[in-house]
Image (cartoon, rainbow, N blue to C red; front, top):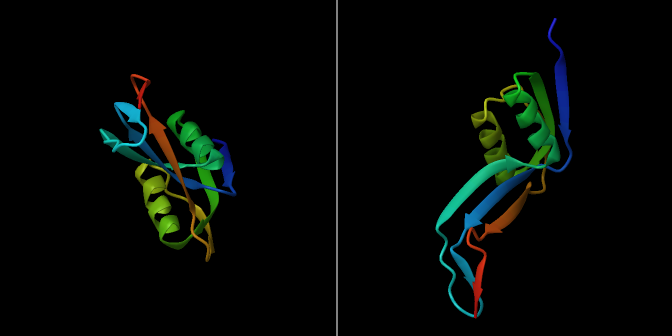
Length: 106
């Protein structure tokens, strides 16, 4: 019998990552690409276990429009049996900025 893992996500997030060629202070910074992923430690553990071929059920607290978006993003990873606890407050968003060339000017 295969084990079932439960991953608890008390504070899941929508991780929004932006890639910029460089950071320019006091000027407009143009985004080259944008990526949106389900995140938070509990969700990341669930994704990792799923990639390893394990049966995993994420359990999380989701709220508002962001919560609905996050549930959809999680399902797109292949995780289907999500146990949802709904709250009124919005699920958090995390914004990450990446500079592949690590160039700064300004």
